[in-house]
Amino acid sequence: MSMLMNINQEWLEEVLKLRCFCIVHELDGYKQLYGIQNSDLICKYNGIGPSFFPKKIRNEIDNLNPALKPAALIHDLDWDENDGSEEWYHKSNVRFLDNGCRCAKVKYGWYNPLRYFVVRKAKLFYRAVETHLGWYAYQQVSKKNENK
Image (cartoon, rainbow, N blue to C red; front, side):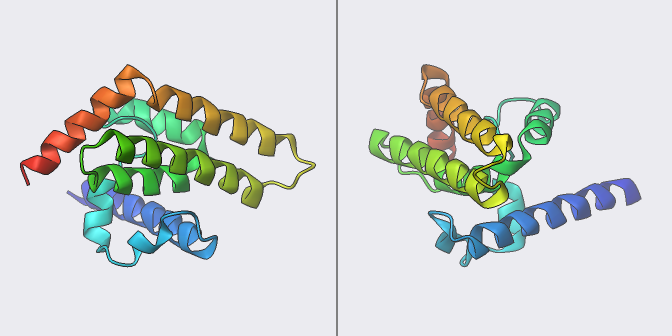
């Protein structure tokens, strides 16, 4: 039980840091973070990657792309609140791309090659989520929302 509480505490601290980053740097969509309880935020944020990926894989993707985690937080909230439309799907994916590029610029100066690496990764994830697999994942979340 203690280990489980420790994991949840670590996850809470991680999510709160991401929330603060989004708000301080005013990422697109950050205002939706004001109206959400920490417990709800923890449940809605699953990291980078679709929810049907095993948690271990999503954790590895997160570990390899830490600069994009704030963009993923807002993206997860967008998807959780989606209306099932194609317009919402594309808008939330573009927001991820824009926020990912902004995260890169905030974290790394123009002279740092990591800045351009993170921008490239944001574009890669954007293209990945804009595929049929991304649309499928979005529809699965939409179905869950209909059953709420």
